[in-house]
Every structure is written in structure tokens, then in C-alpha cells.
Image (cartoon, rainbow, N blue to C red; front, side, top):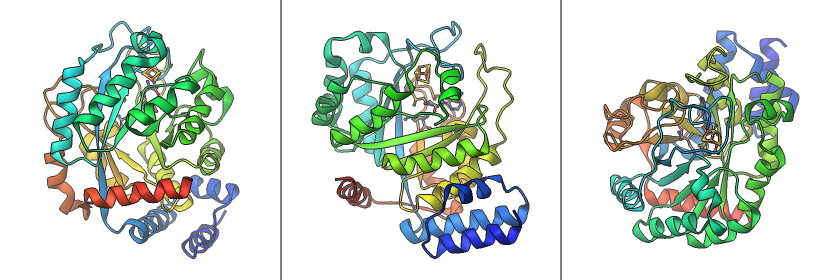
Length: 355
Ligand code: SAM
Ligand code: MD0
Ligand code: SF4
């Protein structure tokens, strides 16, 4: 496809026309500097129209890194004996959540591996109680990223105070899913988003970039995210991990992720799209915001013994991912922090749109 075709797709999209699957694929394929400038420029324009230069911050509390699963890309897979394993106590989780809330994050993402202790527990009482206690301790909206749960738990989690449920499919190509998440059910994972939404939670879907998917797969995922009716969507570059089956799988060129974020922004103009600090650390923030992302995720307080997911230590203990540090950089990034009431208004609009 010629540049002019890319120009025409972008122009029509800026005028409000929806992007088709074929057009998304065409945009995702472009690598000439002129097309890329045009694409990133359009993504920024669409973000500006819908959000101005306001960005949101999500604190990240990876409270248990124990996992019963064996995802081939993940540092915390059960077979990785050299992983970093810990399980934070309830008091530690409460104190981490309170200090993140005090630092002014818009949401707190409580994340765990599929910790056997939590997943074997009777009706997930431990998890539901934890959400309830954190919710009692902070006013900040809560996201939960616990892995795949049975249908009947979602209502109780919502009631306990979970505003968001995050569970990433990684890909919408079933065959690739089986290689990435062996012994796990594609449908069960896809249903998580539906069940969470039906229970009144907002939902996040995500894909990884550079795990063996084709450009057509990426386009298909971006369109599928529309059908799922999720409220936040992400793309994260695959980061190879020691002692995992994908250790030698080449790292993903970050440009592929940036292009994916920009096409996501054009296809989903009003959705929240994270710029994760968990891929390239703080140095990766500017290009992701410039590609159309508007949520800074993986804010982690230093020296608390917390890990990231794709980058388990990068910029954590040096304070690079702290709220204070990232806030200081906003001016030079041309962004400003949205207010907490901007965020609650946004969540209200998301809920009304999904109802
Ligand atoms: N255990 C839960 C689960 O898998 O849903 C919650 C953890 S979830 C936040 C971990 C996510 O981080 C994965 O779904 C994947 O998208 C991303 N991730 C994990 N390892 C990664 C890697 N090596 N490179 C890039 N992204 C990765
Ligand atoms: C992040 N490391 O925000 C986190 C994580 C889990 N819900 C999110 C992948 O980048
Ligand atoms: Fe466990 Fe989640 Fe890692 Fe898979 S991605 S091994 S479920 S922590």
C-alpha cells in the first residue's frame, strides 16, 4: 500500500470514520519514517481531543509472585527455580496500598501470580477479604489482576471493592495462545472479561508484541478488543526472561509496540491505554506517550521488596518508577497529571457506556 493510502486511512479516521480490520493491518505494517510520523501524529491528535494532555497513574503492587502456571514467556512460571518468589503479608499489602494512595495515584493494581494458596482457597475467601480490607483502607479505585478465576467469585470481588479486573489474553490466535499459556484454556481466559463486566467491573485486555504473532494477528486483536467492550487496552513488548522456554526468542523491536499503541489509539479513541514502565523502564515513557498512551502503569515504590513483571528490577530500587520521580518528568513530556476527580468522572462514563 502506498503512503497516500495510509494518509487516506488516517485522514478518514481523524474525521471520525471507523477503521476496518484491513486498514488496521495496513497501518500496522508501515515502517517508512514518513508514514510513522503521520501515524504517531494522528494518535497524539486523537488523544489530545479526548483527554487533552492529562495522564493517569496506576500504582502496581505485585503481592505474590508464586504461580501454579507455566507460561512460556514469564519469569514467574512455576518451573523457573531461579525466579524471585515472595508473598506479601496482609499488613504489608495494606501499608503499600496506603502509601501509593497517599502519593496520589489514580488506581492501585493488586497483582499476583496464580498463587496456589489463593487459588486452592475455599471460594477465594482470602482474596475477597484482601480486596475488602484494601478498599476499606483507601479511597483509590482498585484493579485486580489475579489470573483466571471461576465465574462465581466475580460478584463477591465487585462487592468487596474491585473496580477493575485485568486479565490479558496475550494473543487472539488460539494456536499461539496454547504455546504461550500451555495447559490453560483460551475460552476460560476470554470469559474473565465477560464475567467481570457482568459483575459490574471495568475490564482491561492486553496483548504481547513479539511473541511470534503476525501483523494480521495484531490487527485481529485490536478489533477483538472492540467486540469485548473492554475499558482499558494494552500492548507490551515481549522481554526475554532467563530460564524460560522463550529465553532465546529474540527481544521484540520496541517500534512494533509503539506502532501497535498508535493503531490502538486510532481504533479506540476514548479508551485508556497504558504506557508501561515495565518494558524499558523510565526511558521508555516518552515514546509510549508519544504513540498515544495515556496511563502510566507500573508505578512502584522503591526499596519495598516489590518486583515488576517483564522487568523484575529495572528502575525500581533506584526510585525511577516512583510517583515522585515520574511526576517530575511530566513537564518535559508535555503532559500533566489528571485530577482524581477527572478519573472518577471517567470511570463513571465508562460504567455508563458499558451498562
Ligand atoms: N498472573 C496473572 C496473569 O497472568 O494474568 C497476573 C500477572 S499479569 C499482570 C502478567 C502479564 O504481564 C502477562 O499477562 C503478560 O501480558 C505480561 N508479561 C509477563 N511476562 C512478560 C514478558 N516476559 N514480557 C512482556 N510482558 C510480559
Ligand atoms: C504494568 N507490570 O502495569 C504491570 C502489569 C498487571 N495488571 C500490569 C503488566 O505494566
Ligand atoms: Fe503465572 Fe501470570 Fe506468569 Fe503466567 S503470566 S506464569 S499466570 S504469573
